[in-house]
Image 1 (tube, one colour):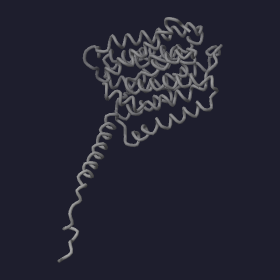
Image 2 (cartoon, helix red, strand yellow; image 1 turned 180 degrees about the vertical axis):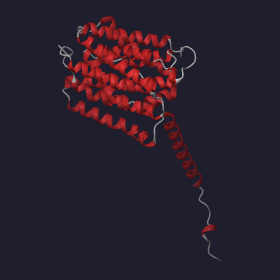
Image 3 (cartoon, rainbow, N blue to C red; image 1 turned 60 degrees about the horizontal axis):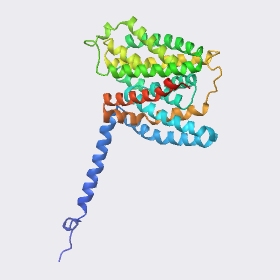
Length: 325
């Protein structure tokens, strides 16, 4: 009797599940690829975004271990607030509007909260701005006047904040955040006034004025640039993509101007004890939330995410507005 060749051997009955498992693995990879494409991240950026939350968690744990025991509750609370702010930043472009009122609730001085919010924006926002620049959502005719106006407004706002008592600033900041939040909710379905302008028809003077108003708000409170600046640009019939991309580019020099003004002003931190233990956890929490923020937007949609985050911002600011510090 001739020996059986390999082709004559029976096929093992368990090859079916192996095939199914392979299909499931391939399907999982396809889902990951689709999700990455929705977030607009390159494969390397996506891998980095997955690793960042793990690294940031380790950093926060290290700070908690090194910090004095009395600082640990504030550090933990600040990290959670920063995570919420990071989610807001990557989903609807609001950062300080969540971070600042959260820090006020933790007892952080309003001037330090505003300054640290602006400082963190200088570090975090360039990631989003670079992405919009690569996508062609930044135009010089919009970016240049909003940068100039934003820097002027930020300098004026930070200088004003340095001359006002901290209790007044705390209520003023909370009030501005509540008002901006209500404006966002009221105009959520009001996309603009008529058709979108051509790029060459962008009103330079009006855009500069918008940058000044938004910069003044951010200089005082560390919040408001996104809701005020972007909303006013859209109402001026600027293409929403150009409004968001150009405002992100303008936010970096605006925030840097405000930070430098705070640092150079002799009275900016008069009577304030900066909590330097918070800076690193706030940065780590903000960065860790970048990918989940993109997931939040893809799951909920921009309108639902805007409503949820705006209500959170208002809810965090109301106690300070009502009872002060």
